[in-house]
Image (cartoon, rainbow, N blue to C red; front, side, top):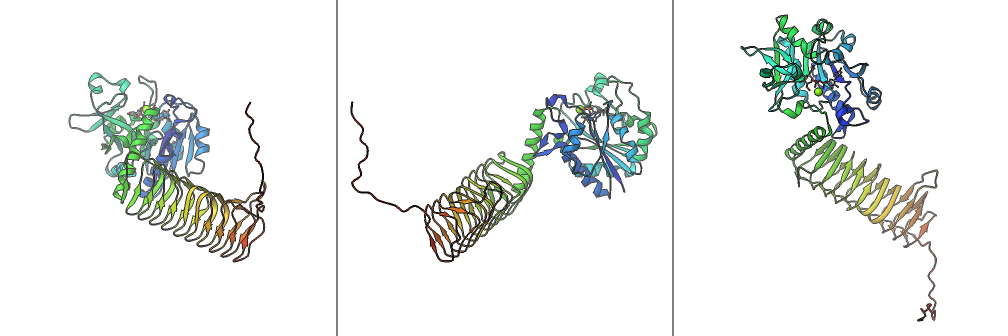
Length: 459
Ligand code: UD1
Ligand code: MG
């Protein structure tokens, strides 16, 4: 079955007070409309196939540019004449679809399960609505039912009577219908209402007039169908999302020192007995294997951390692979292309980039190691720098098994330090060092006896 999905994203979102179109504001690091597109894709593939049509208007060029890698078609709505008018713009694209689901680009967190249930309920009805009961239904379209309890229409807040305003079951805006109905209903809409708009919601009364049953599926939680109109609502949904992530992580075996102080902006997977201290941010794809512990204030992006490893406070890891039983930090920075083998140690104020650190090797203090390959059991002393860049090109440093790099060594790449070799503290190494050799490359110390320091004169 082909289930097409129309996502409405043409509105201005003036209450955001932003140069960025509303639907590009992020929840969990991802534009709201992208969350919607991903759930739409899940729903379409559940039923077989389906195309996704995003209706854009205000800021449309920006929306298209930001999401140009996604597999969707764009429908321009140059004038915003209402939700019915917006969906009508996509009618030509919907030819050949079996069912159509309408979503809003500013309602980011509806679950795929709710969408699948909604579309599935069309098996024996021409139209289904996702509704929710709200303590404060102000501003929403109210679901009107007849005395038998069947849905007969939706009345917009601005068009409602006092009695209708008291009803708490509201239209979330999300609905699903059999595609051929839309081709008939949408051209028949009129703008004869308080706002002078073409209301998509008027198709409910049309379905009923044709003798069709309208199904109302109740959303399981309010936040799933909550729209974002301002930054407070955006922050509210962000917290709800993070709270759910925290619950999931704990269910999967992680201890969170404070479930209210973790931010997951991507996909975080955890093994058993992972411990995450407060104020950590996880971005992109991060996997923490069994027994990993993450200290407070770490930022970890697109990184794998192997079993039993410890990332200590204030460390920043990006596109790194940390092996088993490693120690990183506090205050370490692992940049893209860093790979630590088992039992490696990276200490405080150490920056690594495109560097392989062999098993059991240590870079414990105040160093920059980039474009380098370290063998096993290498010890890099405090203050060591790989001079990997001549202003134009990058060069590689190789340090072989068991080498010992004295403190404050500058390794001018390309250069190799052989197996078991040693560099003296303060050396600037410009020539490769053979296996087992000691390289000392620094001024010789002279001690001058009888030297008199200048003496301050008393006036
Ligand atoms: C709509 C529903 C209302 C429901 C509420 C839920 C209608 C007539 N009313 O009201 O029953 O309770 O949503 O939030 O459908 N949009 C366009 N083009 C347009 C108009 C709107 O793309 O011409 C988009 C907006 O960007 C927004 C969505 O459609 O994402 C809803 O539009 P909005 O004007 O907020 O509708 P409401 O009056 O809130
Ligand atoms: Mg609205």
